Amino acid sequence: MPRIIDRLQYALKQFPVARRFYRRVKLKRYRERSRDSAQEIEVGDGLRFRIDHDISMRLNYQNPTYFEDFGDLVNEYVSPGDIAFDVGAHVGVTAAILRNRVGEAGNVYAFEPTPSLYALLEGNVQANGLGNVHPLQIALSSSIGETEFFVSRTHSGYNSMSLSNAMAFTNDPTDVDKVSVDTSTLDEFVAVRAVEPSFIKIDTQGAEFEILKGAKKFLTSRGQKPVHIYLEFNPDGVMSISGITGDDMLSYMEELGLSIQSAFPLGSFVVNGKIPAVRRAEFLDNITRRGAGYINLMLRTD
Image (cartoon, rainbow, N blue to C red; front, side, top):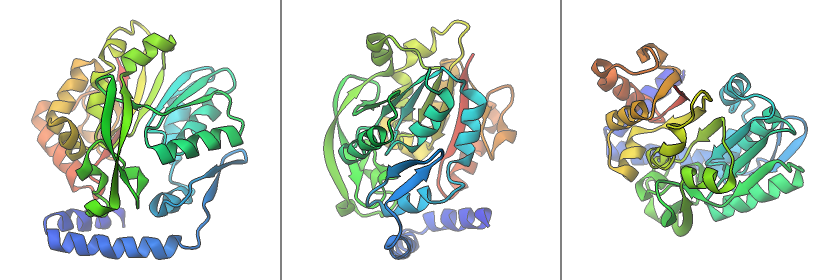
């Protein structure tokens, strides 16, 4: 069934009028389904998180399998006592999953620039007594300062530094609000705070290249201590913010010495931790043909 849905969504991308109709129907269905759904969810061990009005994320978060793959990778690549960064922390659910793994001896730094989501993140951390989860209202990027940030009223999972990325769910610019957020680089943050993460989750709707640029010093000076990075790779989203192709993004990962540990469900393209140049076009086309237009990569510094 997922493959059929992916093919349908890919076909709709080729016909703008049909795509807009499909999105309106899907949005109406989401609103009907979420009207009476809870605005609070339970996250392992009795932790309760407010997820507020977001109709799509409410439905996603109430799916008991929604975070299974992420949880499995956290259990494999994160150890008790580790320091983890959650970049694009939303309301704190993934930060809580990381915190459960690092335990009391570890720390989780949760970065979320969206004002409304940060308020929920901070409230959820406090309400659940997660003292070693540290919420930060910062957008990690390639420079220090401020930037425009676009917030979807319908699907906060699409909030982005790019207007087109933020409105990708509804295709409606009136559904998006613009705010100003503070930016910093990962290199600056680890230097000032004197912390060194061994695991970094990056899910930022297209800002992933900018974040890796801002982390170059840290990622290329690790010596024998590997860093694992769980990264959402959306070639169109990266192009919208950074103006580079998916091929350029893959090349930059190699320049940083990052090897691909997992690329489910496209793992067959990975050879010795890389996507061979002769297969990159096919790999990127397969990502585009997936309905969501992205893939989650598990990376490691070599």
